[in-house]
Length: 102
Image (cartoon, rainbow, N blue to C red; front, side, top):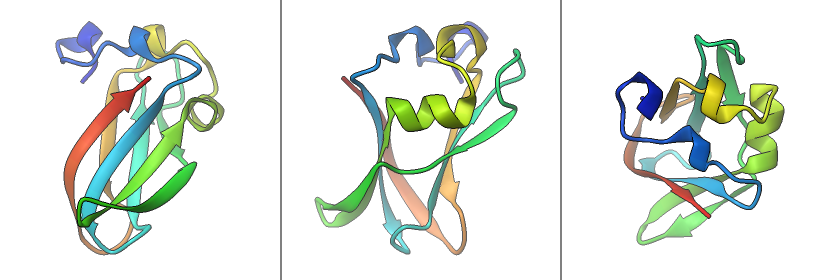
């Protein structure tokens, strides 16, 4: 959850030079990253990865600002982003971390 909904992530921190980073195991390229809104943004925005690969013995996927903005339909993440999801698109994945980097 975002901080405006009692969670720990401040969506106002999302900047044009930043990206989300998801590290996982399971089936490569089967992780799904979703931005959810019940405050006027896209209700269930599946974001396409901008980069994928391996690190630390796991798979990773990066989700750029532009990919997030395109899927979410706005750059008003602070006002409209309510929750972030990472999970399996198909099959099984184990999520080790979801980070926002800038």
